[in-house]
Image 1 (cartoon, rainbow, N blue to C red):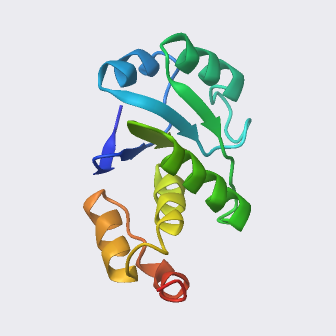
Image 2 (cartoon, one colour; image 1 turned 120 degrees about the vertical axis):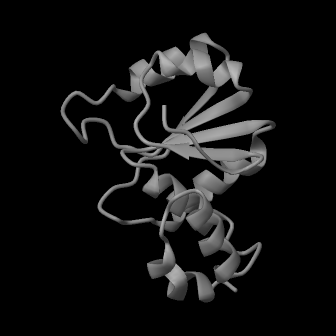
Length: 139
């Protein structure tokens, strides 16, 4: 697993496997967010299988699929709601982690500046500098 901590309450990761859920629970995560639509790639574990594996070890599981570089406000709001409503650490995953990092950045856009958010993403290994204009509109 390539877990990339963003802050004390969230980390992002590329595609997980059902068997990863045991390790996530052992590391203190309390919830998992999947940002991939089912069937995006051949061989990708399905949402039902991932949900069952997460719930089997006591993790909450949330499915907020986004694709095509689109981040509709409904998805951002859903991500924000999970983050704010979840006690403990959250791990979000997608194909590479970029969608998750983008959703978390947009969900926090009203809390801090674009520079802080872009720097936060960079420290986790994601370049979101192209989002600066969208984030500045939230400053």
